[in-house]
Amino acid sequence: MAAHFGRRLRKGAVTTAVAAAAVAALSASQAPDVTTTDGQERQSAADAQATPDPTAADAGATGNSPYYTDLPPLNSPTPVPSTTVGPTTGTGTASQAGIPATVLDAYQRAAAELTASKPGCNLPWQLLAAIGQVESGQARGGRVTADGTTVSPILGPVLNGVGFAHIKDTDHGAYDGDATYDRAIGPLQFIPSTWAWAGRDGNGDGKADPNNVYDAALAAGHYLCRNGWDLSIEADLKKAILSYNYSQDYLHTVRSWMEFYRRGTHEIPDGSGSLPGNRSDEHDTPMSPSVPVTPSPAPKPSKPGGTTKPSTPATPSKPGTPSTPSTPTPSPTPTPTDTVAHLEDAGTATLSARAGDTFADRISARAETSSGKPVAKVRVRFTIVGDTDAAFAGGESHATVVTDAKGVALAPALRAGEKTGDFTVRALLVGRAVTALDYRATVTARAADALTRTGDTALTCTAGGEFADRVEVKATYKGAAAGKVAATATLLASADATTANDKGPYFKDASGKPVRTLTGLETDANGLLKLPELYADDTTGTFVLRVTTTGGATLTVEVTVTAPASSTPTPSDSPSPSQSPAASESPSA
Image (cartoon, rainbow, N blue to C red):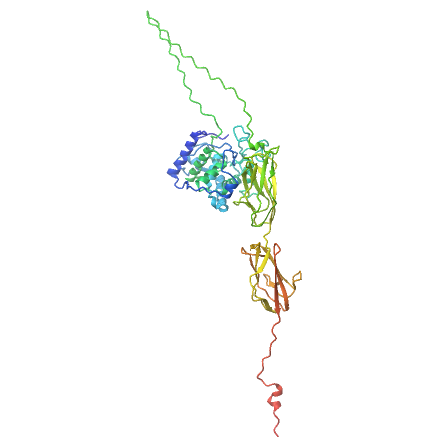
């Protein structure tokens, strides 16, 4: 266990009061930019339908595992780089303000990524740093390799329900090495069931590793930015932190460190960070100082001839307090999650939608006991799996839903992306390993069921010329404009022909060569498609332009090529040979 330093803080009123005082002091005297409550509590679709507000029964990201309760100093940090080699246990402001280089880089890179992908979240890197400090002491003072992986695994206690949450194994020991119960893992202390959906690849090595600080920091950022939370709003910030570990003491401790880091921090060498020493699961209290025993004074000798006063007997020492016999630890009371034997489909219909549309049906799963009775108030995690850009409301690939009184968890609305094909939505029980329930979903291409031409000008051209008008069509689906629908244009010899003509009107490709079939066309957002210029070769006659779209819509337009008008010789002013003066004049007699 890391060396202890600093003051010892306990769960309860003292911890809360001191932590709150730290935040207040930093906010009032040193932090003019500290966020304050603005009275706005926004609730997104994901907030209302997917994940409820954090509660004590919610295991959060960490399974509500223990955390370090050490608080930062109340004075502003002095950004003086540490020259100490190896972890220290000092409580100086400068040493606590320093963050190991690789760990600091991971926090800042994760926050930058979230700024780009979820700008509305307003995630400060100092929040990640605060959680990293409270969860693992910045990866045990920065004991990480060059790629950000911890030198040795950081494991929380066994979550067997004795003093901690009761979470049976969900990863078969793959992450935490325990095939019976789960344990929080890594520098940000994710439990395996949370990492299964929240894990991210933050260092680009192709895998999501909870023991890597880059991966863990990015995962923590996405975890804190879910549900449409805006962390610049006080109410959302509190929800996000409490969802990580549900404890008011935890909230105040994290806030204290976040504001401390906001006032200034600096980079220190990896492995040289201070190690916290006080954890929230340490219930021992400092022993009271022992009271010295004052010996009874020796009896004074009696005066000669006088009456001897009996000496006062010494107060007998108090017998030692007998040790309390150990009481057997009772078995933990089964939680609703413990009673779930399996998940059943609760009547989900066929899941199919066109690209860009919302699926008409929503996924629902029912938690049941081994006897088939529904189980209420357990969490079901829905995760989108496969090569797809489909997402739940709010743009997330996962959503956690609490079952209702009938044991049913109804997933948020699912929206198809632009990628077509099949994918899977997987339902898993949070907190216990039961067989996953998979739902197959299909995204079909955007389609049109009708095509019309926007103009009515006849398409006529003389042989060897260029048609004056370009053809424009509009695609609709059930009367509404069908945008982004794939289309093909083909020039045919007649309406009965099935293959493109080899002569007659033509388009041009990028190199200027004649082509009579155009593929890869697509209607715009309003369902409109304007074809390229059309040309005619020397072949005359009536031809057909056929436009088709995904979904079967077809439009046929006649195209006519006429022969050039015959040329009329221009009368010559010069006399013809027969009319030349030499020929018409007779020689003189």
